[in-house]
Length: 309
Ligand SMILES: NC(=O)c1ccc[n+]([C@@H]2O[C@H](COP(=O)([O-])OP(=O)(O)OC[C@H]3O[C@@H](n4cnc5c(N)ncnc54)[C@H](O)[C@@H]3O)[C@@H](O)[C@H]2O)c1
Image 1: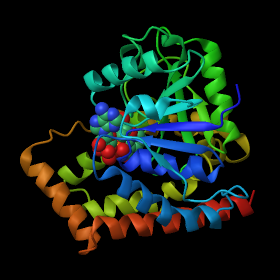
Image 2 (image 1 turned 30 degrees about the horizontal axis):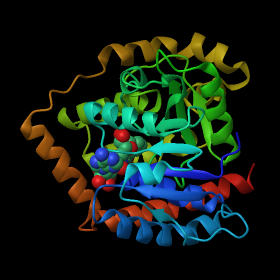
Image 3 (image 1 turned 180 degrees about the horizontal axis):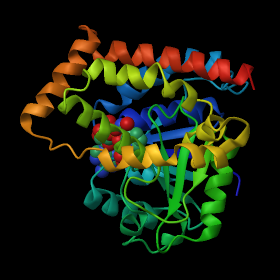
């Protein structure tokens, strides 16, 4: 089924960014959100994302930031939708209810994808009559810049729906990965959680400041991770012998590190240290300014990577 119209259900941080991407890729976009502020937020967000999308060459000929339609009622928003991207708050009960409502309103062949960062599709689809078309399509913030989308189904999702979701995300310029089974947090957030836990442990133990632990990522392995993931990075770490040599040579030390990794207790005092640490690192710059700086530099990285392919 050809997708012409995409419905965005829930338009906060993630929904607004998805709206920008789908609009840039030439789709008709309909947005629904119960908040009175959502329409203004999305219009401002898309307008400010547009020049960035243009500089990335992501805007299809003829696509404009205007023309996103707002519908306060879910029924009107879903009327004529060929694909739904749900981005409501990360609350299981609420998403189960919204999925049941969407399922009752949509043609049965329309895929309903949830942006959920960590909920299980088996739960979200549990009250749907056509659960076979429900998938997780988990993006990374901001979805209009980060290519990754994690695709996974629940107990009752049809493999064909996962195939279609993978093909759709690929066709719109995203880099979907398919999870063979559902786990809380999918893949990337579990990886982030593992790294963040150790980052907090190092701060708690006084090994380094919040700013220096962050620099240990951004000025070091973080740069490589934009090119090769943890496995391929160590394949190169093994020199001419590749991963096989890396394992023979350095698995022992890594097993020692694994045994020593921490489990920080998130006491109020530790939470305070983390908050103060990032505030110090931010040097008074508000979050909006930091986000603008992040997006500018992310754009530069994406452009550089595309040019160096
Ligand atoms: N923020 C992130 O970094 C991030 C990254 C990837 C995925 N996600 C996922 O995206 C989803 C949205 O997160 P967010 O950060 O954009 O949250 P958010 O709070 O910024 O936005 C949620 C929006 O949903 C709206 N909403 C409330 N009730 C609704 C309803 N019944 N129907 C439709 N919309 C409703 C709210 O008005 C709000 O605009 C979550 O599932 C989250 O896990 C978030």
